Length: 234
Image (cartoon, rainbow, N blue to C red):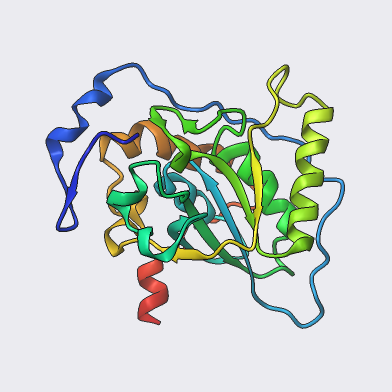
């Protein structure tokens, strides 16, 4: 797990010393698009999706830069409201995963496209209960489907990628959990990648994901991220 403490919303600088170790950065790849996808409801302008794939800083940062996404909020999913706090989630015993709730226009970007970016760029879906240096079930690869339709698309896509051996001999470790509540993370976690681009963890593990998004999905990349603080101010 991330070996640093957060107190009163401030990260202890000394806690990043372990990043002198070799990089654990994931290798991105553009995976095939899903063969089945959700159809955008007529007149709908907003839909939501919740994904977990390691530290939420990087996942949030990626989806904040996807065309059609209006907001991406870091938080916790999979556990109970009373344990949806960073220090407790970090124990790995709450059932929560660090997750990101994405608000998007389904007429501009589909649920399947978000899944494609999730599996291609946002994280390595073959790692079980870890991402890079972060270990524990709170860093698991999970699609938190909001309904049966999202679960159907996610499960079909996982099966498609496994059948095609998209990741070679490695099966996807991604699970699908349905109708689990999402709880927003503390304010100091929001927009963390944008606000702290020189933080060693961000520079080593997360900024490369933004470059990969731009390179692998130029048609979906937007240079100006949709920040949580801007959403709150509007």
